[in-house]
Length: 448
Image (tube, rainbow, N blue to C red; front, side):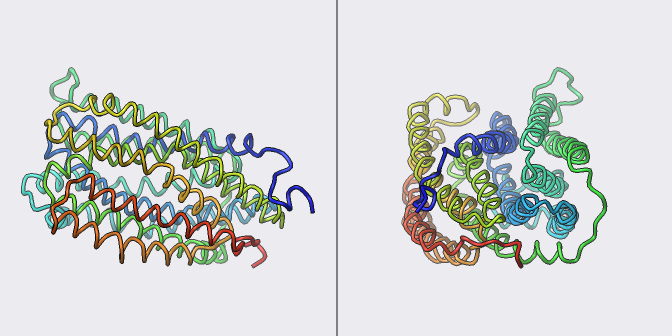
């Protein structure tokens, strides 16, 4: 048996992984930084503004993560078709993906514009938070459509071998968002300092700029021609429906956790609103390795190179969680420094921030393992129904009821409530490992 057949790569795949992972992680960090910049700058306006922006950001989070499931399916298909040289099929997937994004996001954008107040009132018992959330939601209603378009364009670009330009577009969007936020909150021109409406408009404009840049780059890279393939629409639905439902259920569960924090009190909600984008950024450091693994595995599977795919799986699942452990330790040492950067918050909120920050750091290696196992390994071979079943049971039937009991019935401290969610992630490590070792995911999806 060859070295690859024994599960040991003939040469280290690290260079190939890093070539994709670094730009993807940087782009994910930059994308998450858009939310962080908003919440960081809004933190100077007080707890109610922090809580309101955090709540509406979590609404968008549910749909963005669901779209990530859809674009993950697109990425798997594009990677395999590109690897087999079928460029016309890639064009069909691009336009079909944009159609699916419109179907998902346009209804939400309309709902956010016309019904933001009654919906916001369901999310918080605090009237002041509801008033600000209503305003922010209405003004940012186009954001989700622009984000969906951006995700599809960047996904196709990356899966066809170009990870640099999507990152550059995200950097420009981040810088423009930061600059516009500064002008509408603290700028020298008084007439432009319009507060929360200005923050919302800046968010929309920066995302529109990113979409425009990605479109220009994709036209130059892929030179797409209009292709309307019913097969592509059906393929995305077949490959993406389980991914999208799975991600929607998972993100909706995270959103439900946030509702629990909202009803625990404004300080708890403000603390979680501040830390949520930071947690996303911590995970984003390693999300590129999951995406890179999925792309490289998809290309191996598309060429029926099953031994190479198995070797790559073993490589990433042993090394990158260990790297996350080292990174988490460094973040723990810097906890006081990061928390000190927030202004306009009380000492009680700072104490809540510190406790949850330490929990997030401890959870990072666990989340990194599960992230790579799902988006890198299992999805590359289409083993999505298993992931869907596991997420449905672990979050909705176990973690969420326990979080609600801990936070609302027993009144436990916030850090202990968050620890319940970490315990749920830890339990899934063994389950994902067991599933991967069965090798069900080792299959070529393009033959059907």
